[in-house]
Image (cartoon, rainbow, N blue to C red; front, side):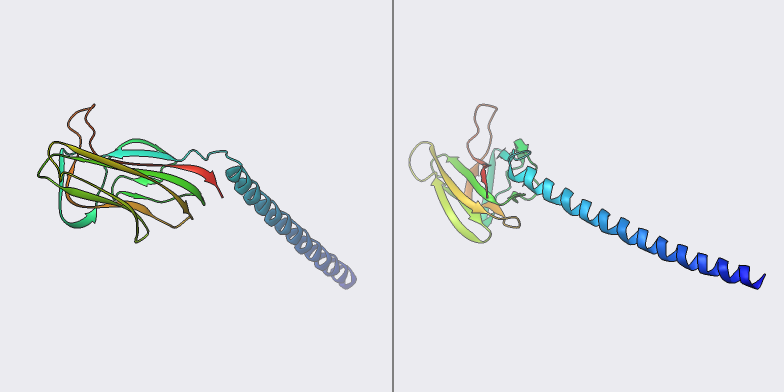
Length: 182
């Protein structure tokens, strides 16, 4: 009986060793598969699949008065493919490294001057102004920026920023799109 117990204990020890070896091989293979899935996902993104990142936003109010320089939150979103623009805080956050194009515009009547600044992180990139001459002024600028994941792009404004009077009368806007993944 004692011999049988010793043989069973030896067999049990051998089975435990084989089980540990099988678990190690399973975990190693699983890790390799997860790594390969991550590589394929990154390659899919880099090759243009799901790279549709475009937004266009305007103001919901007829007028936005900013007594100090503040972020101008364009809260009506007309397009937001890729969901990179946040209409709650007015910030665009790129989901991919790449070259992006942005456009800002402002339109103001005489006597209600205002300025808007396109900002990358804390750096001013471009600015436009309107409302300093007689009649309506409208101005816009376009900028091409290289962005990395974690950067932010937004518009700061000061003074008067005219919003939307009706569907056809959008005076100020903020838009952007991914041009090329890098």
